[in-house]
Image (cartoon, rainbow, N blue to C red; front, side, top):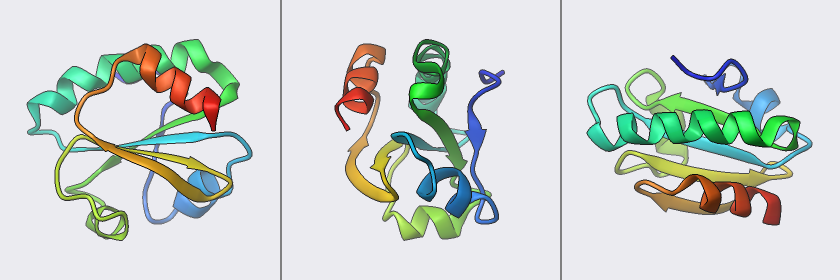
Length: 108
């Protein structure tokens, strides 16, 4: 089960929750049938726990939200998108370590 502060993004809440955020945002584009996605999930739970209100940790289920996945050019999962002030600052495909994610968010 995901940390309670992790936001599940949809096309309906994306503009407000991600693009309109006043803090850095990490978006995990994932799929239920993806092994690496399952390995990354507890790492993101820890990031959400550690970073608190300093950033938004969000997830997009690519099977349910294909339009968002296409908008961000997601071709493989997991894909992590780092945003600040409504703009994509960096995109990484694959697993990242907790400290690397937190450091990237704090550097934005």
